[in-house]
Length: 337
Image (cartoon, rainbow, N blue to C red):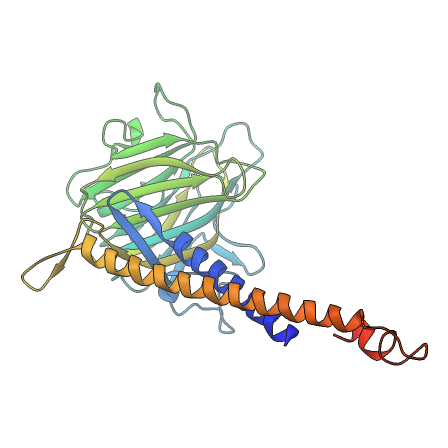
């Protein structure tokens, strides 16, 4: 009986912990809540990157890019006039998504460049002058720019967001100054921690970009754009380029998730709108009763466990007959229970 009560206590405690973790898993971003994410294997890549046929069924790479199966996909070596790319073979069909990229930019020179880019565009594998990709692209480019081509009031390295319409050109000579949708300066080159970029997009709602470069699990806000619409079904790509100055540009891992969101304001149901308050209210009441049930089970288990403990102690205090037997023998040995 005593061991059963202990098990009840343990199960109740674990259930409460799991409920708390489920709550913590929700990510609140403005007026949207990302309830859960589902990893997309088609747009994720990790070591060893390739199969036994030296291919990857979901990704293409080319130009000067090569793969070290234990470490990285190296887009460019630390040498001049290099260019390399990595592109998904399939378009990203999720309406809302999160892309987390672990990358590395390193080199030994005091002068270094030019940088690398992350692409979510309608085109793919079209080399050009913008960090190894074509200009006049249609979609989102996030540039990890390490070399300033002109004088600015901000510092480099710099993360720059730019949305191309397929017609206008990115002003590379001026580092896109005045064209960006958002930007931040971040010294992600040759850090002591893994450098990562996280892109969160909720369709027609917002684009949020964060970067890790200061410390582990320390995400710094880079920029956020509200009420933005990106092209549907973009390809996910990465490219890098060097000129007279150079660095090694590496992709360590890419993890892409489809994001399932809920709106705390309202949910559209049929031809009208359903208030989220009512649904969340019913959900909160069911959650309350579930917690109450668990709490009752924990209390009941604790009570019966305590009563059993008292009963055992009572047996242990019974007088001894003839110097052995009941009191000081079998039933007084608490290690047997």
